Length: 107
Image (cartoon, rainbow, N blue to C red; front, top):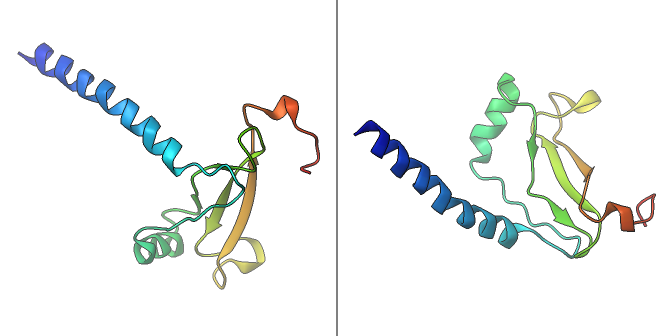
């Protein structure tokens, strides 16, 4: 019986995977804009203050369909000189599928 339950659980995971891919595609921006809403901000800020988490990454976005891949990284309790007094936000340039086509530095 346990092996059947395990097989059913694996099938559930396999069926959910395309939904995750579709959700990821729907959330991805290809025009260098990103609207990022941080859910449960108060709890996440508290976690940052207590040291439970240091930063949060946004979903990735692109400058164009074949452009640079990036995301935002936010430190809700600050980073560096701003730690404990500010919120710090950074843009992270990520390795993308089309890097071999793109000029560097970011243009």
